[in-house]
Image 1 (spheres, chains in turn purple, brown):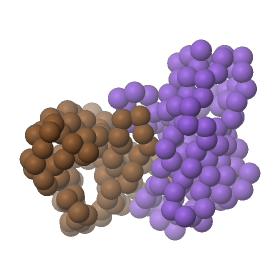
Image 2 (image 1 turned 60 degrees about the vertical axis):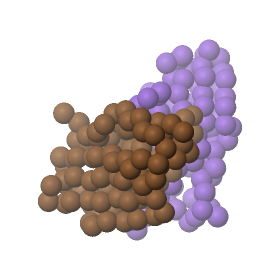
Image 3 (image 1 turned 45 degrees about the vertical axis):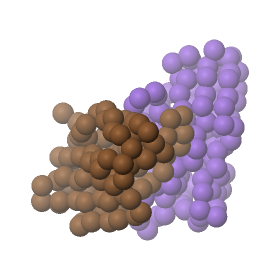
Image 4 (image 1 turned 180 degrees about the vertical axis):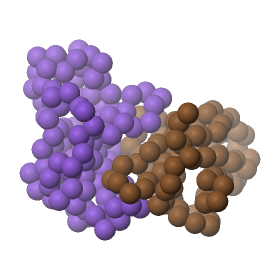
Length: 115
Length: 108
């Protein structure tokens, strides 16, 4: 299995809703990433988990809460989002021993719309 | 100035043409990555380079470490090659530094 899966593909939520994005990989990768991508822009790194521990938080607002329950799963919990949070949310994973080479495998993304 | 610069930003080609996209970077790197993203879609890693040249089908990627420059070439371009091509570099951390992307449209 050489892919990263993300669910749901599309999500529409109100500003008072609580929802979660899910990412899964079965490649034995021990680094997992959340990115946010706005239209016509490159991805922006949000969080990095390394060996199930949060290693990088790029000053992301607390309305985004990541969770890594095990080495294959990565969640992003969403609460009280703003319309400007509407974007494509991408998950990626990489092998730990390729730290500096960092070949990342991306999922298809979740298209989030906040009303 | 961005640490990773790509050119051109937009490129329109006719089917069958040879295409070149350029990437220059200003930081020390361990590897350079070429990524492809179709409209509304996820990102696919095309190449990871630390030196020399790699070829995969109609795609060729080269890197010149001394000049801090890489090129992605597409031979015999096809409409299905239409996508955004992103150059990114990696170094000592888990972070990728992305270029702004090149939007390629190949017309039949």
